[in-house]
Length: 202
Ligand SMILES: Nc1nc2c(c(=O)[nH]1)N[C@H]1C(S)=C(S)[C@@H](COP(=O)(O)O)O[C@H]1N2
Ligand SMILES: [Mo]
Image 1 (cartoon, rainbow, N blue to C red):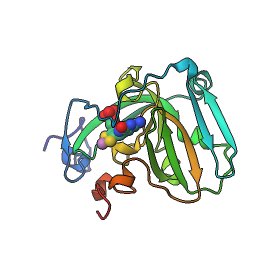
Image 2: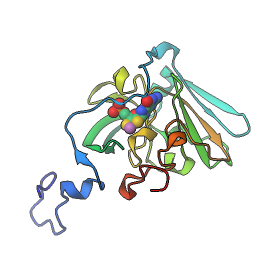
Image 3: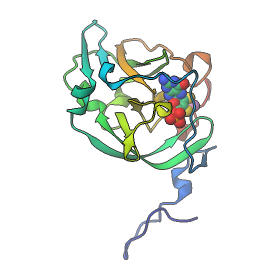
Image 4: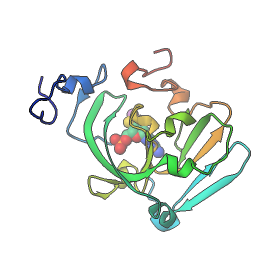
């Protein structure tokens, strides 16, 4: 198996191979397929907002400019779609969810992510914290294209990509877990690619 990256002289560990990075049942692809359940909503950045609402109804909203004024990160991650393609080392730019959630007081443990166009997906709040999830607006050095979720999408690369809501409009923090769009029609509630959690019951 071809090692990924180069090894420095004196490297003692085992080379990290493509198969180490490929979850079960996946194949690597160089292309970037578009998977959308409906038409692409065209959302202008000057009308764009991102709102976090807690279980008590408190909310905080960021405009596009306010989001762009937050600390930005360049993110390199492997992504995995439940339709079995994986893409290594995708480059994104955006803001950590830790930044948005920093001052939010909540006892909620679940989140429903909402999108312009009506898509939703649910996940545990803990999965959005700890440097594991972002609101991204850049891809490969350019503004994120509308078909891939621009102007901004959620990126949660440790879960199957359906959890990474495109055209994200907000997060609703809840005490009870409620299935989102795909979860309510049979996709797994959590969606860990390494445990191959594709469908309910996996
Ligand atoms: N708003 C919204 N987000 C979405 C979807 C969607 O249909 N609508 N599809 C999901 C699914 S099933 C996948 S695999 C990824 C696909 O992202 P891509 O089109 O950028 O590859 O987006 C996810 N986020
Ligand atoms: Mo998907």
